[in-house]
Image (cartoon, rainbow, N blue to C red; front, side, top):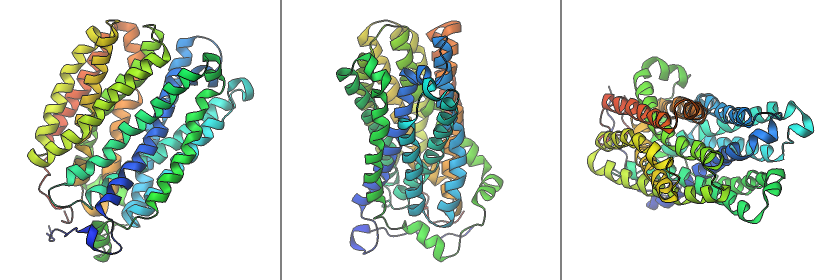
Length: 439
């Protein structure tokens, strides 16, 4: 083991380096845009994807088909992790972040232009699956690069706080996506929304991507990676190196992420579908509740990041996963109460805990891997967690609620949280390590 001195990171005083403001903005804005794109599809899947892109028939079958299409992106994300991680660990963080943003943006805009089943038949769901796969590839490469940009440029003792900025992106992306759907629900009739209105959020992505590209093209490479390049620490095949020598942190990092995904997609995609179909809420009512609740997710994210820099990653995550396990027991009495106040309380609890468990991951996952495989290792862990925690979550919840009611879906949340709790127990504390240390 070779120990290198920690880097001195005074970005504001060195020409050609990233200022702290630029780091925060670039790591935040990219994930916000990419998650906006991702959540636009998730919301559409709960509302219109089924009847638009699949044959007429049972509404349940159409909804399940839409949720299966939703899940495709999660299986694409580890592929995106390996692809973009390879280049991110070989040529740098900046170029890879620009490419991932383009892949996601193009896929999202094309979904907004794609004709439905009534126009082109079976080609519609096939092309939808291809483009959804493209969204997954783009997002698979996005998060790791954004997290590394933030953590590898952070001042000493503030890595979790800087790693929080890409973690805020999902909250803002979700709020903008659902806020846009909420606005459309207010100004368009149901027929107008289902005919063409749902496409508007997909097309808006083109403008957001241009903003993100402008910010990211002005970045300099992170000092930790620049130092690794100067010392020729790069490896030929980062994926092989990661899975051969760092499989244990990959496994524990993956399982640690499961709780975040389960909390989010059960409380948003499944709850939106269940609330509008089984509970009689209008589309705009439930979207309004979600927009309110996601503010608490945005609150939980910086709160947990601050706590992580003060007390360490493990104590904060163990507390968050334990509370998340207990929250599964609130699903049936709150979400199933048909009281708008109780439903709002359930959504607030789940999304706050999602933000609380999600905030530390921006620092933790990069910290458990060395520089030469950090992009690949952190990205794969993050996105494999999506396969386990989110890809089948809305689909499984739909089946569980049909078989045993909301209590069974709450049990799904509890099981996911306990799995992450056990994984966090197996991780070492990383608050005080140096990212410039070769391990």
